[in-house]
Length: 203
Image (cartoon, rainbow, N blue to C red; front, side, top):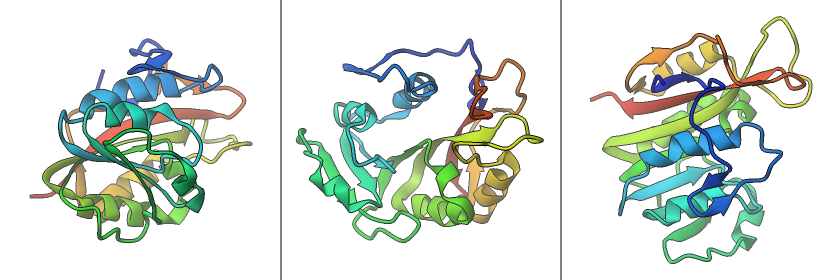
């Protein structure tokens, strides 16, 4: 499995993330969370950008490993109970600088970038500014599976647009890339597949 590439149907996946069971209708999360969680740093400081303002297990799984900031642009996120000593909910628009978040080990952004449209560069730039020199950015995002057809329910972020945003934000891919859609996990009704990537700052 390449570090950067489309999720394939045979990739590792699980209905559990840490000690938390996933909702059965989350068609891709069992792949995304299973792939992303091993990048968490034991005892480190991390952020889950776009964590949502309803219960999602990924931020809690991260908080079992290290200090985690659960960040969302909707102020309802502050109504979510932290529940854990190492989990802190933060209301912030992460397409703009977040001064309180600095020197993070890892920034996670799971299936959110596709919703940002033209602000993808701004978000990646913020992520870059919040990690320390050797920090990593771990993302997944929906991509149109068949470029000749619409995505009728949820937006998709074209891979070429993402690649341009990575470069403009002063980031680069970590590890190998496989941009083939052969055997890609995809949702027929949504016309979406899912890409995963690990990014770092230029030295």
